[in-house]
Image (cartoon, rainbow, N blue to C red; front, side, top):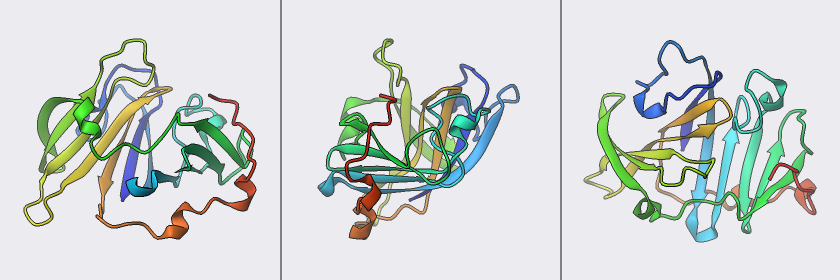
Length: 199
């Protein structure tokens, strides 16, 4: 599944539910692209960030985020793989069971928020915002209506809190198929990888 990410670069309280699809004029932002691979049967997920790493490490205007990266979740462990020079080792363990692929039934733990149009199509938004002490909340997912042929609800977007407000991934080219097994192969330089020292 391909996606485009919109990441705010100045601290703000504007959540992506109010973006159409870009933030309001007072919010500065950066654009990027990437790809997500997912296989719940393997408890595995890979996120490929083409332009800059997921904006959770520091201000986007600072070089700390200005490197391409992959997040590989395999064997109940999250690996951060830096594709450019970065403040982290080339491969490091970002957390054990900290970041993990969402279960297929994860919406059971979220709450319906609203319905709206996104890129000319109706979208149902689901949000989790129940713990004011959880720095990851609020976050939300958007889904297009169930496809009459496949029976699946196609994911439309995912928005989440980052260091400078919020970011959102707008999804496209969603395919219901297992990724090639090579996607989950852990690079040799990740064997015995050190901790990223971040979480």
